[in-house]
Length: 376
Image (cartoon, rainbow, N blue to C red; front, top):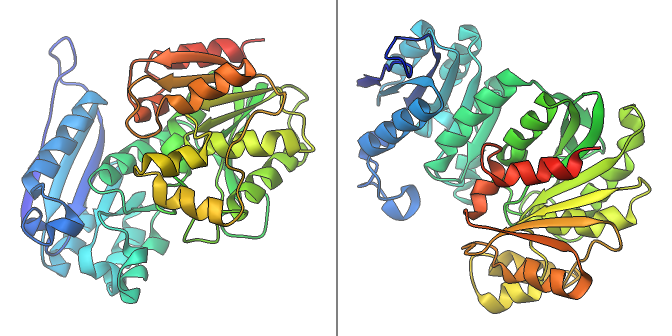
C-alpha cells in the first residue's frame, strides 16, 4: 500500500488552496513496466504517479496517489478521502467488486474510472465493469494519457457543467450542451473513429467557448466497435446537425469545429444538413482516406475499413466557408491533407508549429485565430 502527495505554493511562494484529486490504482498496477508491457506499457507506477503530480502542478492542482492490491484498503481510502474528485483504476476488481462501486457511491465524490488497456477488445469478461455505473465517466484504452484525460474531465465538468441532450436512439447519440448568449458552435472530436476516444477529448474547447459566451454543443457519435464507422458515424453527425433547431437556442450563426476525424465528419455532414452551417473549422482534419491508406501510418486500418464500407475517399466543405489550422509537422494527420484541400478549393489554411493534440488546448496560440473567426 502506498500513498504519495504533493503540495506546492503559488507564484508568490504562498500556500494556496488548490483543487485536490486522488488517483487510486488497484491490484497488480504496482507491477507496471514489468507486467505485460505490450499491453500496459513500459512505464512504472512511480513514473506514472510522478508524471500526474507534475501534470497537476501545471494546472494548479494538488494530486494525491494511492495503490493497493487489497480490496478493503481501496475501500477505506475511498471512504476517508477528502478531495474534489477521484480517478480510479480498480484493476481486476473492476469486474467483480460491487463493494468498491458502493464505496464510490457512498463517498459522494465524483469519480472517473480509468483503464490503461482497451478492456472492450480483450477477453469478454474484461468488458464488464460493475464500477462504471457509479462513476461520472469511464476512460479506457488510452494508456497513461487516460489518467490526464480523467483529471481534465473533472476540471471541465466542474468549471462548466454540460446539459446532456439526446439527438437519436443510440446510447452515443448524445451531446453536452452549454447554453450561452452568443452563436452556437458544434464540436466534433477525433480519434480515428476508434470507440475509446470520446467527446471528452475536445471538451476543453467546448468549455472555453461557453466561458466566452457562446453556446457549445459537444457531440458524441458512434465509433468503430460501437456501431459506428461508415455510414454510422457520418449519419450520426448529420442527425445531430439536423437536430439543432430542437435545442431551442436564439437564432444566430452555426459553426462546426472538427478535430482530426471530426473534421472529416463535419465536412461531409455540414453541406448535407437541413441546418444552415455558416462556417467549418478544421483542426488538423482528415481529408483524404486514400492518402491515409497510402501513408500506411496509424490512420491506415480504420481508413481502409471506411473505404471498404463505401465512405467518400475525400471530403470538401461543399461551398461552406472553411478555415483550417494544421501543424506543419503533424505526426498523426499529415499536413498534406489540409494543404491539398486549400490549393484545390481556395479554403483558408493557417500553418501551425505545434503538435496534433495541441489543437485541443484552448491555451495554445492557435485558439485565438479560431476565436477571431467566430467574432461577429
